[in-house]
Image (cartoon, rainbow, N blue to C red; front, side):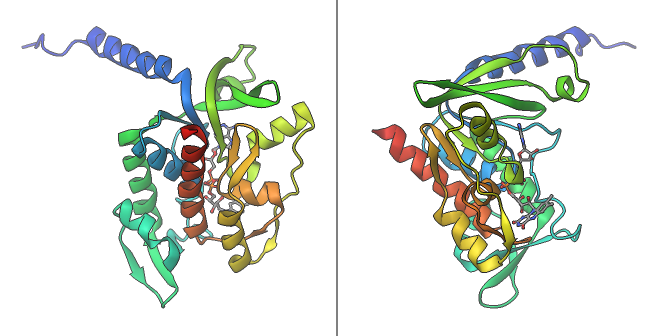
Length: 255
Ligand SMILES: Cc1cc2nc3c(=O)[nH]c(=O)nc-3n(C[C@H](O)[C@H](O)[C@H](O)COP(=O)(O)OP(=O)(O)OC[C@H]3O[C@@H](n4cnc5c(N)ncnc54)[C@H](O)[C@@H]3O)c2cc1C
């Protein structure tokens, strides 16, 4: 016997309607975060918790960025004691290794950041940011397209998303900063330096900042812009940088 309760067209309508509702609401966002790695997810979570409309754009199918593989595909990550309060906020469990170093499961960490951020912010996968919008010396939004358009080299125009603040959380690529530098010549990227975990972790949080009017950096992008050392598979700096960028944007937008 065939049931009439489940209908294919209703399923399609529900997906299309709800997706485009979310997309339309995001076209004029207060904050757009580019990149769904640890720093971007943490920033999206804290900004939305503070009441800001935060939209996060990730070009890949899965969010989580560089978390999943831990170090060299060993799926454990190290977090230093300073960042445990962020793990607690996201209800991620961890084990003490020594006084300063704690170990979390990479899959649990990725899952928890995605889950909690998705409860509050608008998260999109498969959207590639390909350019910036600039007006009067300020970044005012982003130019975006579906990732498969870029992958297939299709001749299809992008659309635009306006934002009062943009966060470049694209990791090593520092994509938004590189694009802004290329298009305006007004931002210089120093490039990430050699491995020095202690200096890299401190620097990435300390230098999390607004690098151009309306454009903030978080995570490994901070190292790429300011020429800071890399730090390997320790994630406290990424988490704290995401939280700090949310605080900086809050104090800027509140004015
Ligand atoms: C070669 C290599 C070296 C590494 N070295 C280090 C290291 O020294 N120290 C360290 O801590 N970690 C390192 N990592 C791991 C990892 O990058 C970081 O630990 C951590 O995941 C960085 O967090 P993040 O939030 O800054 O960015 P990521 O986790 O890298 O996330 C950035 C996200 O942005 C997305 N993205 C990029 N461009 C766009 C775009 N145009 N539009 C939309 N989305 C975009 C990416 O798909 C990605 O999901 C390395 C990774 C690689 C591949």
